[in-house]
Image 1 (cartoon, rainbow, N blue to C red):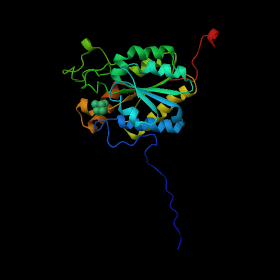
Image 2: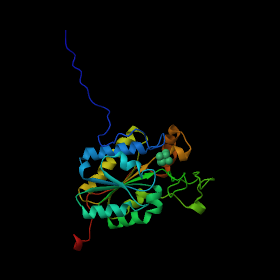
Image 3: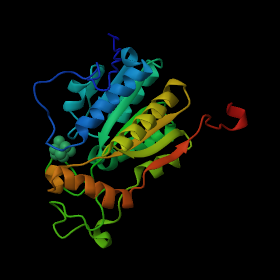
Image 4: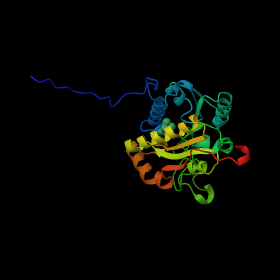
Length: 263
Ligand code: SF4
């Protein structure tokens, strides 16, 4: 009788940095849980978990991200994650420091703090969660809300004549000289998850190599405040969000050019 050799390849598992919790902090269909997993996978693949510090802004990431990822991780006063990250990075330059911030925290309350970190060209990594509303506080309009999108503060839809236009953070970051990498991703399909993993890895690598700021924006579903089912949220991202916020890399450089006298 011939012996049949079966090779087994592991195709699924939980990242070791993912803290096992008895429940999920996130609403059903929220993409934050997928992004938590993605961060764990990237930190493990880069082998930097022992020297990484995370900082979460105010929003749905505030408590859940720090307790879900097994690295030194804390929450910050509203909008101030880039300032705290700057202090930690400058005191401990060997540490890999990243922030996780939502639309309100980064794009509204903390926009000045974020912009100044970009202007200074801090060697940080920022993960920006764009769900086009203020998720935690009841789905109010955020700077990233789409034109015509209904929120609790724009019941007739965002009117550009009075409420302006959506904030394009990844494109904005790409215009700053101290930024080495800027990209926009989603995790709403397996192919996009793989692209997002590559983008996040690159953003961290820019910091590890001492090149400059790395920024990755994630378009993320908020079924509770969008008042859509999880499958309809995926459709909304594919048809509406990506039309306003195109995916891809907006900047990827290996050198930040300095004036000759400062090299
Ligand atoms: S409110 Fe929205 S962003 Fe917050 S956990 Fe629920 S679905 Fe996610």
